[in-house]
Structure formats: C-alpha cells, structure tokens
Amino acid sequence: MSKYVVKLSGKDLQMIKDCHSKNPTIMKAIKEAKKVED
Image (cartoon, rainbow, N blue to C red; front, side):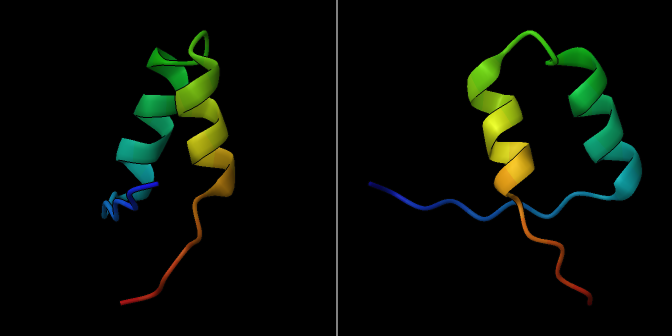
C-alpha cells in the first residue's frame, strides 16, 4: 500500500472533518493521522 503524507493546519483538519464526516475512508485516515510539530 502506498503511503502519503499531508501537512494540514488545525483549521484545515477541522474543515475536512466537517465536510467529509459521511466518508468513512477519509474519517479513518483523519483518526489515524499523527500530529507532528514543526
């Protein structure tokens, strides 16, 4: 499986959660996302 890394701000992350809450694949990816400090 390929692995993709995306950098999002907290605001972007919240927008994705709000807009894609009906998409289980995206929500699973968000739950598994790890917060990395700059």
